[in-house]
Amino acid sequence: MYIRTIILALFISCSLLPAAAQQKYTLEQCINIALENNRNIKQQEFGRQQREIAYSQARADLLPNLNASVGQNFVFGRSIGLDNVYQNTNSSQTSFGIGTDITLFDGLRMKHNIDARKADMEASEADLEKMHDDIVMSVSTAFLQALLNRELLQISEKQIETTKANLQRRNELAKSGKMAPGELYELEAQLAKEELNRVQAENNLKLALLDLAQIMEFEEFGHFDITAPPAEVLIGEAALIQSAAVYESALQNRPEIRGMRYRMESSEKELLMAKAQYYPTLSFGINIGTGYYRMSGRDNTSFNSQLRNNMSNSLGFNLRIPIFNRFQVRNNIHSAQLAIANTQIEMDKTKVELRKRIEQAFYNATGAKSRWDAAKKSIEASREAYRFAEEKYESGRANSYELFLAKNNLTQALGEDAQAKYEYAFRLKILELLRD
Image (cartoon, rainbow, N blue to C red; front, side):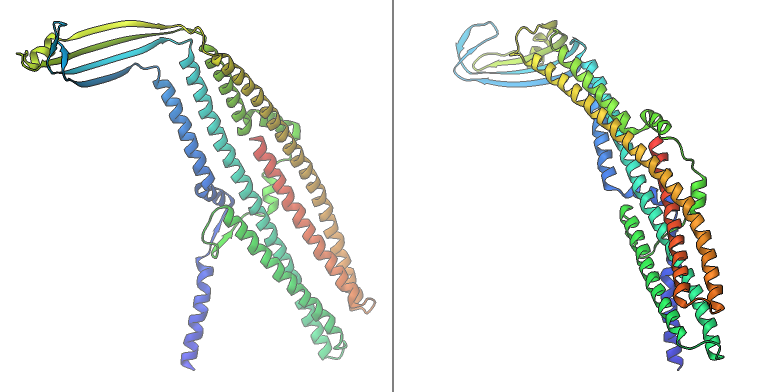
């Protein structure tokens, strides 16, 4: 007996460990975890860094270059000496040089390249922000769905408590002979049905939490739970804004719109870069060189002396004038113009899609608000109908079917109220995200 007690105590303590270790996460915490774990965001960040490198390189192209060179040549047979006379002997020559050049004018091509790469970098940053917003939207959707399923579970549990209380009261009446025992069977059947609904609601809640955890790429599925204020508080923190106002704000603030503006700017700069190829290019260069020359069978000046004596310096300008380039510049310009036209179409499509999403979110929000108001009225009527049916049943003027029907109508009204309430909160959240 003592051993059995110990084993039972250990089993109970072990079964309580997961509940004790369970941690509840708020919506903000879920969003932060999802943003930190999402692999697509990490890949997009790498792309943004590549655009930043390209922008940095475009700016560095304005700087002069500096190159050093070292050469070693061997000539066998007939060689030319320092006096420019050919002799039948072998020779070797070592050369050293350093030079720099800088582009003075290229039709502003490098400047336009800097502007284009900067626009690409800012467009990539806007894409990263858009991806953040999409993650926030996905997490918020799954979070509110889990809250809805939890409230539906609580509704089913309350209905079970009410049915159990009625069953216990009628058991007492049956024992005292005031009620036929057969009438308890229908109540027990109703309780079994409500237990089944509770199990289904519990499974729906688990699936909703699993879906949220997977969006967050969260590994601890078994000990994952959420916490949030009631939906009425979430709704009270937001306001229903007209779709036109949301759209006007979205045109200024939404990252997908800013990203398309930056892409349009990049395309325009690419066109200017293509046109700049019609202009001549002027560059300036400086070179310093020396060398050592050695011929076989002759007395050669020392290495250090030759390095000093053979020193040569040069500087000069180089002008490159394009005359005919097989229509390459013209075709590049046409390609850049087509890219601008295509980007403009993409921007128009983005605006249309954004307007569509905002209008749908607004009308869905107003519809959910209307359904919520109607559901609240339905709850009041259903509660009164259930109370009246219960009184009639107690007085023998109604059968159990009428009582169960009134209770089922009340349960359905509570479920519709919860669904409309959380849908309204979700639509308000969408409008808030689309506006900012």
